[in-house]
Image (tube, rainbow, N blue to C red; front, side):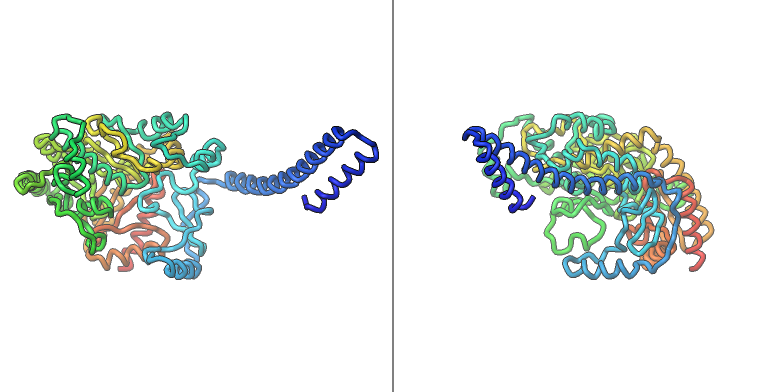
Amino acid sequence: MSAHYYRATVHHGRAYTQQLSLSLNSMAKNLTSSLKLIRGSRCDLLSRSVSVDATKSQAAAAAFKEQPVKDADLRINIVAPVPGPKSKVLKNELSKIQEMSTVSFFADYENSRGNYIKDIDGNTYLDCFMQIASIPLGYNHPAILSALRDEHNVMAMANRPALGWFPSEDWVQKIKNSMLSVAPAGLNQVFPMMCGTCSNENGIKMMFMRYMHNQRHGRTDFTQEELDSTLRHEAPGSPNLSILAFKGGFHGRTVGLLSCSHSRPIQGVDIPSLAWPKADFPVYKYPLEENVAENKAEDERCLALVEELMEKASKNGAPVAGIISEPIQAEGGDNHASPEFFQGIERIARKWDVSLMMDEVQTGGGSTGEMWCHTHFNIKPDIVSFSKKMCSGGIYYNQEHRPPHPGRILNTWVGDPHKIILLEQVVKTIKEENLLDLTRKSGAVMMEGLTQLQNEFPGLVSRVRGRGTFCAMDLPTVQARDKFLVDCRESGVHLGGCGNSSVRFRPSLIFTPEHANIMLDVMQQVLKKY
């Protein structure tokens, strides 16, 4: 409503009042009524405007919802170069403001569905990499979209709380419905986190805290010397301890986690890190069934080295407070180890009374056919970190690793309600649709098909390995691997690389045997060209 109309209406109200010779009180009442009418008219116009926009938004949402979210109507369709001209223009613009030469293409997420991703140039790919293993239910899953449209959930996202201080009334139940409903056996404590890196960083802090708590024989009060020396980065407050990790492992890019990682030098060059011990991770000969004795000896060699490093660290004055490992070394090359190896690591941790932490950031959430990959090994770690397919980062841990003081594991948000909203739907869908069983079935088809490709192209494909759909294979060189990934993408199948020359497969949990066969057919056609 314009100011001119407002003034005219008020003037009209006054004239009308004078004409009727109303009392001063009556005039005030009429003025109040007129103002209410004006405000009402203005609000009505604004409401109509908002209503029109809301109707358009609701109509768009309804139209989107009515479209088949299952990907049965989609198929591989390459209509432009990869990357296409639109992606190249945007990548050039992006490069002006940040170093992001890693970008493969710019995606059209609005029109991506299920296991298929579209780019802005109109290409449609079968996505077997799923945002580096982080999309559990494929693109635009109806359960996820429905939860995000829920008005109650919108409020939770709009008013992001500092959860360590002001959680919402339903927060405890949401944690129980999501994270705790799929917690590893024996781990009844959980801290939500923002990402995999901060999950691992806080996990190693927990191992240090538990170690020193035991060194103090359970004393929870700190001496003044301990508090003062902490600020000087000196003992006893800042003790000289270490974490034992494995060569080939990757846990994150903070200074603490670079001290635990040992895969790609570019991730840590120029950055000071701590010289913590690194043990050899088993390097097996494939096929596994033909090299049982050799691989058993490799397990024994690596376990003996772990024992040696534990002793050496203690003698050097930086005792190991905990051991961290991925169940499958993902970034380092999809390196697998046997249940016997991990059981041996657990025995060593118990012998030395140190913590055992499993980094399940990439392996957790169901892709190996179990919710947690370490359950394949029949071990019970003290701490399990997670992220990616779990939507939110976080740390599971046992009661022994619960910090005795408030604020020692804490940040502003302690996770994010938005991520828990997503995870609730993911967990519910995994259970209702039996997606772990589907993952095992699809994984079996993948492993059979990859083994056939290995037999068909023995000079190109080797070391086929996997659990569930968490599979990998090797090509002869990094150059051959990179060319293979580009050629597959240009043929409509999106895969990832890792390690020196490995191809890794990271499809969603709704990836079916049919999708696996489509992927395998494309791979076969690409390999035939070499």
